[in-house]
Length: 239
Image (cartoon, rainbow, N blue to C red; front, side, top):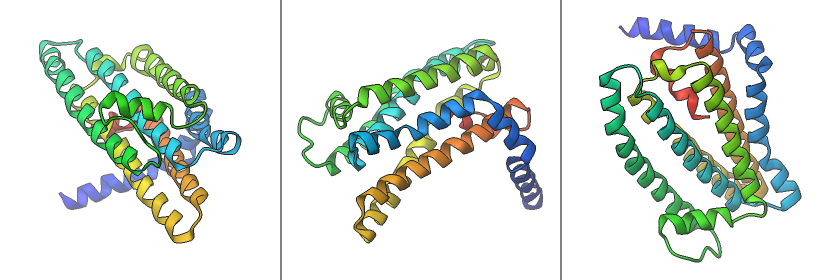
C-alpha cells in the first residue's frame, strides 16, 4: 500500500511539473486573470502605501468571498440524484455556520493585531473594519468577487462541473486557504521582526499567495485534462 502511494505521488508530481501541462496552464486566459488578481496588492503597496494590516484584511475578505461561492457550488451540486440533494440540504447550513465561525475566529485574531482597530467584535464589525482598513479596499474586493464569478461561470456552470460535483468535497475545499493565510501571516511576521523590515513581511505574504494561486491553476489544468484524482479535484476550486 505504501509503495503504491509513493508511486502515485511521484506520478502526480511528474505531471504537475510537466512542461506541456505548464504550457497549457499558461495558455488559459483564466490563469492570467487569477495571477493578475493575486499581484494587484503590489499596486496597493506602491500607490496607496498599504502595510500588513490592509493586506491580511483583504485576504480575509477574500476567504468570505470564497465561502459565498462555495455555498453556490454546494447548491449546484444538489442536481443529479436524491442523495446529493439531501447532502447539499444538510451541508449548506452546516458549512455556513462552521465556516462562518472559522472566519469569525480568524477575523478576531487579525483585528486584535491591528493598530487603532476600534469598534466591536461582531462579524459585521470585523467586516467593516476590514473594508475600511486600506484605501481602495472596495475596489480590490470587487475585483476578487469578479474573478471568482468568472471561474464559477466558466468552469462550474459552463463546463457543467456541478453535474459531477461532490457536496462533501466542495464543502471542505475552502479551508486550505485559511491554513495558507495563517502560515503566510506567521512567516511574514517572523521575517518582519527578525529583519526589522515590515515591507519584507508584506512581500512574503504576497509571494505565498501568488505561489498558492499558481498551484491551484496547475491543479485546475490537470482536472480539465482528466488527470486529477477525485480527492484533489475540489481543492483546486479554492483559488
